[in-house]
Amino acid sequence: MKKFDILDIYRAKNTVFTAKDISLIWKETDLDTIKARINYYVKRGKLYSPRRGIYARDKNYNKLELATKIYTPSYVSLETVLQREGIIFQYYQAIFVISYLSREIFCDNQKYIFRKIKNEALVNNLGIERKENYFIATKERAFLDALYLYKDYHFDNLRSLNWDFCFEIVPIYKSKKLIKLLKSYKNA
Image (tube, helix red, strand yellow):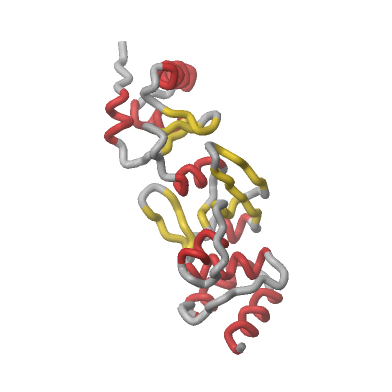
């Protein structure tokens, strides 16, 4: 009989897992077996389930990592990045994520806001960095995501943007209007 050791999950770098992630850790292909073992560990308090189908070692998981596990492919962007980078000064408690659909979800006392963009832009990794165990937009990519999605958005401080990098990224959106808007922000 195969042993499904919880320590294998604790040794992993991730703090958040799906059943598929755990099946790779345990090298098991039968998802029913995996789910039964996961449910056993959840009931025993050895794993925490912040959302159906998503598991964490405990309640101290990385919320940004969870954000990108809810819907994949996805990456953290928009106000979450713009606020961290000092491009906007308004504080938002919600975590903003770019994905293939638009949704607002409350999970474990945290609000996650998903915004949809075109698949060509979503899957293009230009301006997206891998941090720990999730993907996050650079400030330039987050700025362009905001320009693409929002009408008349107010930015507080654009001085730290690398405009050359913005112009390198902008073609992935395939929007002449966005290119024109980007030029107007640069020249302002």
